[in-house]
Amino acid sequence: MDKSTVRTETIRRKGGYRMRSAKVFYRFLTVVLGLGVPGIALAQTPAPASAPQASPQPPGRPPENSLRADEMAAVPDYGYPPAYSPGGYGYPPPPPESMEGFHTHDGFYFRVQPGIGFTSLSSTKGGVKTTMGGGGLSTGGAIGGVIAHNLVLYAAIFNTGAVDPDVKIGGTSMASPIGEIALQGIGPGVAYYFEPINLYLSGTIAMARFWANDTNGNQLDTSKIGLAFELQVGKEWWVSRDWGLGVALGFVGGSMKDQNDPTLTWSAGAFSFLFSATYN
Image 1 (cartoon, rainbow, N blue to C red):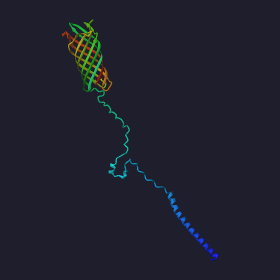
Image 2: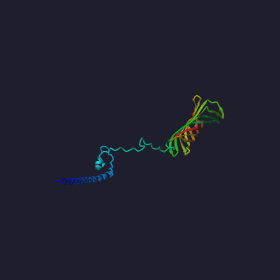
Image 3: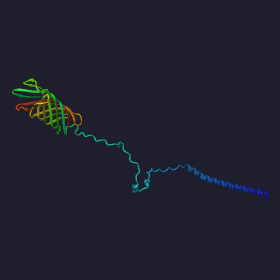
Image 4: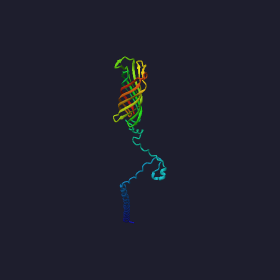
């Protein structure tokens, strides 16, 4: 084979090699482009939103949506205890105090009365009048109960006396060994209160007697038991639910026979200014 033929053959082979190389490159480029474009689009597509997570379950308890109703009843509840409501601590407040009986005269009745007064005794024999009188202490007390609205029934005791009384015979003052006279009585009584001013009137019928003692306390004369009455008008002010404090004016009158001389009758009288403390 001559040189021109060899040369022509060599050129032909190189051309075929180049054609095959071009085809292989073209195919490679096609594959790369075919794979690259979907990859780029996939990279630009936003990621799907993640599914919401279920709330945490208490330890040892399977998810509720995986259990049947009967299985759920058998699973112990380890949840937190319910919150306490505000103000739930401590003891409940005491109930309000009832106003029944407040500043009202009802039920049990008790009264004490200290004070001062003027006491006198007088008698007449053979047309000559003898009187004894003077100032001293007065005391009284009552205990009972309400029987109707503002109406009180009670038992009372009173004592009124005079120290160093003035003794007059026929209207003339005379020296006398008498150092003290006293008038005492006990008996039932009633009182009525006028509301809302808490003013009351009371009256007592009593068995009474008097004493006349010397300055040493020795008895000089006395009387038999006679009949006496006591009248009072008073005003009280409430100082608590059932207690009242006040003042009162009292009058006592009575008549009794002398113990030593049955023909001699003594008339007794007393005026008193009293302080009072009453529970009702």
